[in-house]
Image 1 (tube, rainbow, N blue to C red):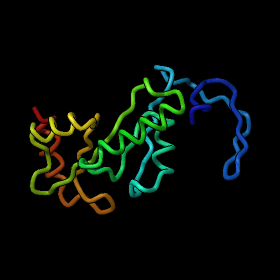
Image 2 (image 1 turned 60 degrees about the vertical axis):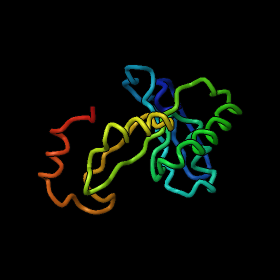
Image 3 (image 1 turned 90 degrees about the vertical axis):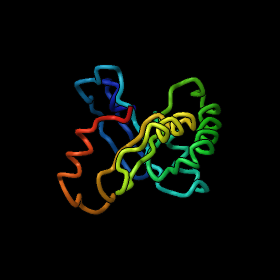
Length: 145
């Protein structure tokens, strides 16, 4: 992805994928598009964490209680790769049918833990939205204050 987003001629030949020389245009306006890696595996599975550490962020099945450990592991991998000072996003999903928008205290707790983005889900991940009205109500409230 990074090679394609460079705006320069790029090719790749690997075990699973091959990209013949191509130039992906137009280039992203800000030089790159942030890449967040999905990590829907237990923390003991290091592959997704290592892949995420080489990119701009991580999202997926990260529990708020695990954010500190995720950040610590990612920091180690990023330090070893020379990326220790580059920004890194941790995205936590929020889905609670009884309280679809977290309280300001929830947001403060997440921020203190190192969460940089909260992703609001209006329905189960692999289900269907039970009511478009519920989604409209959530959106009309705007972000928590």
